[in-house]
Image (cartoon, rainbow over all chains, first blue to last red; front, side):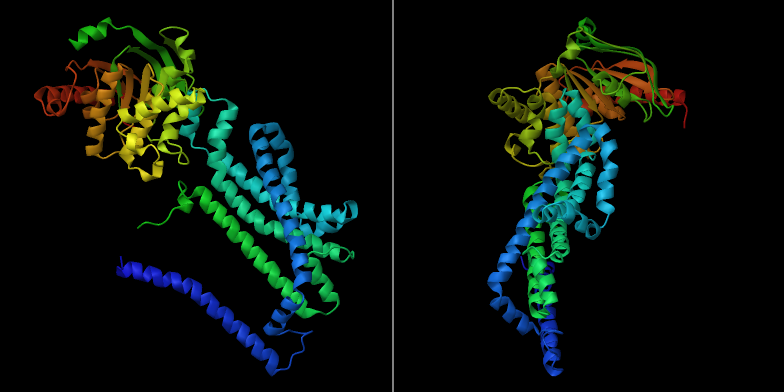
Length: 269
Length: 264
């Protein structure tokens, strides 16, 4: 078992975990020192210790806001997943619809969401507007990747299905969707992070209108009040949420593909 | 005498004056006449580009001929989707499904009752010696085993006609010999008809009751050879003088066909 290669592998694994932690600790230490040494006031740059204190002190407020943002993100993600996959399937089955609507899906994607958000806030109730923003940003990668996947069917397998007289529904369900699954999951991994971004952008845009209680709104509000430590604390929570979403989706991806797809196989050499 | 039984058997499918010109102008086949008789093991042998795979696809109905006709034994026969089995050059398995579900596919597409289907899948797997691997995934199997799964899938509908497009070309020689023997065994047990595309003289002589040698540019039938050696054939046949003589004759025919087709 303990061949030199295996030992090197294990050392590599350990370093992958330990090194980033050391870097993190060094940066925090330096930050804390600089703030104390130069006596920088917290409204300019709060020390890490101060941010941690704020996080604890304001926990109930920040936790509530985090939940609001996460729920928006989750709803946006869910709608993006359903909308993206659904639209890709419809596009794949009905050419006329694809030709008619694909350009508009692209336009929706390339127009910066920051520019769309204020308009949406005028026409829609705020909760809905925030959700729509999260959806707009997140649905396109799902649509694009699923479309690619549905078109990446093995041609011989497609021949085999037609040889046995498979119906369109059977081809879609038994061939196209399973072939598209790895692509779809790739799109969903991107969509998870993007729906958080969409939700945050919309909350910030809405924040200036004076309503809302999400985490991004807390950041904007704390900025106006020069409560810089709370800004950092809220930012920290957003990052942690983003990382959690990323790894959660990576886990789903792995569980769904581990038996058969190249991307999820353990390297056994 | 195998030859005598063969001449008595009925035509299963006949290609008459079949031509195929692709959209880019390539003439794959021109005036191809070919009759597949019930119960025979027919090989289409020829250099690459002689349209043997195209002919196979036309029989399968996967490619439409641009000229000529494909006539089946009875008009109803082609409508019966259980009539055909097709084995591609690659195993062409669904990577997301295990061996059992891959073999089940043709029955599932025909909406066969689950219990009866499971029984037939197990029988097909047993026939190719893979009954212990029903729950394995394609990536966990060797190339030869994947091809066995592919053959089991083609057999599961008990087709009257089994079409095989260079199925063993990518395998090593040891595996290929083993699969050749197993295929002959299956063919004799099921009394099915096989059309086998290959570019290997040795393989075609070993397997076939009849060889159709094709020439290229345009793809057409060059000559037909009856291989009268009796079945069952085994390792003894492979090393016999009879086999050597037959391969020499077939090689000569192939060489002439290639000369007739002109070098590219």
